Amino acid sequence: MNNLELKNRDLDVLWHPCTQMKDHETLPLIPIKKAHGIYLEDFEGNKFIDAISSWWVNIFGHTNSYINEKIKEQLDTLEHVILAGFTHEQVVRLSERLVKLTPDGLDKCFYSDNGSSAVEVALKMSFHAHKNDGKKDKNIFVSLTNSYHGETIGALSVGDVELYKDTYAPLLLKTIQTPVPKDMSIESAREAALEFEELCKVKAHEISAIILEPLVQGAGYMHMYHPEFLVLVRAICSKYDVHLIADEVMVGFGRTGELFACQKANITPDFIVLSKGLTAGYLPLSVVLTSNEIYAKFYCDYSEHKAFLHSHSYTGNALACAAANATLDIFENDNVIEKNRVIAKYMGEKLEKFSDLNNVALVRQTGMICAVELKGYSSQDRIGLKVYQHGLENGVLLRPLGHIVYFMPPYIITNQEIDKMMDTAYEAISLLP
Ligand SMILES: *Cc1c(COP(=O)(O)O)cnc(C)c1O
Image 1 (cartoon, rainbow, N blue to C red):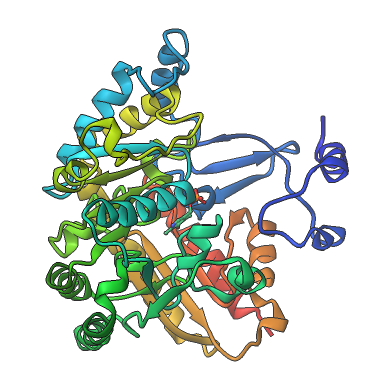
Image 2: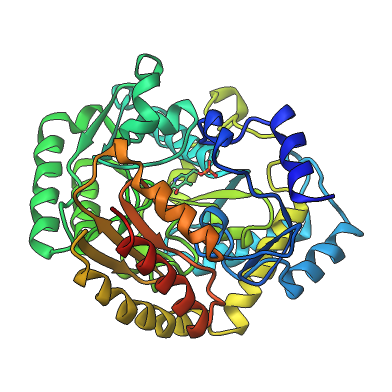
């Protein structure tokens, strides 16, 4: 097998995610033969630093020996069993740990197998909890401008990134967007919270929940805001009987400097949605946690028809739960959050010099996410693609979002590797027309 052969066979039979396939007439696909640590390797021995953690999922490196071992153990014991009417040790242990680790007051775990499905679960549960409570008019979901919550119809409906949403507008649920804080200042957080409160004053009787990405809007071009916004939104939600759904699919599991971003604001949402880092990028798994209070609204005799009759074939898959338990072991044993703070500080120092470039508008950082916003280009310029190509030619997988070049590496990256990753991006940006 070689790079070329696999590329050609691929293009005969595959349709890739989030891709204009015609681009591959000029932009080569990259067949990956193997991967270890932060490095991906193709069939010719070229190595690439995975600066985006393989789409934000891989937090402890590829083929991590500890996680490998735990999955192999599980493979010979139990690979999967139906979770309706049955249970298994990995899912119980994982749920106990998640209840303990997430903010106080999140007591019950409901599993699915990707971030979008988990968002759907949270939306349906929120609506259904109000309905079981006798509140039948709460049919509207609120989200933030510029938000991203996944690609299925419900998740896309609460998202607000034009590029993904506009085509499907006629199919989507009716939702309302309230402004995200425009920058990272506390003043902007307060202004945006005021707007949300104004909306609640008029419409709260129709609003089921607000869903938001705490602190960082990932696919929304790594837009970041102040934790005070979460504090204020939490208070407004409680006052107006609107649920708060925290979509921590991207920011969860240590990305922002705490295990969960909500902990930076010391709040408990009514629902927290987790996926991506949950299995350290090994297997598809997601979970929604909610309170005993919301759980209780569904708990009654079957004949009352209040049960949450939602399921997925692979709900609570045992191999995925084993990967998640191994991931939590690493957090527990390796002092990851503390170490991340040190790495984030180093990345932050290196980030500053990007501001010197005259095609850089600004830089921003939250924990292990650094972003460089370019200026002076239109979307037609496809400027991100040029950075992407320069990165690949120099052994770094960068995948800019439009005019935002960002770094979101696995947590095991060394300072030397950070130098290589960020210096390559710096060079790419300084070479742009
Ligand atoms: C990636 C993402 C999702 C969707 O998760 P998938 O597993 O890709 O369906 C939802 N919300 C946020 C914030 C995400 O970053």
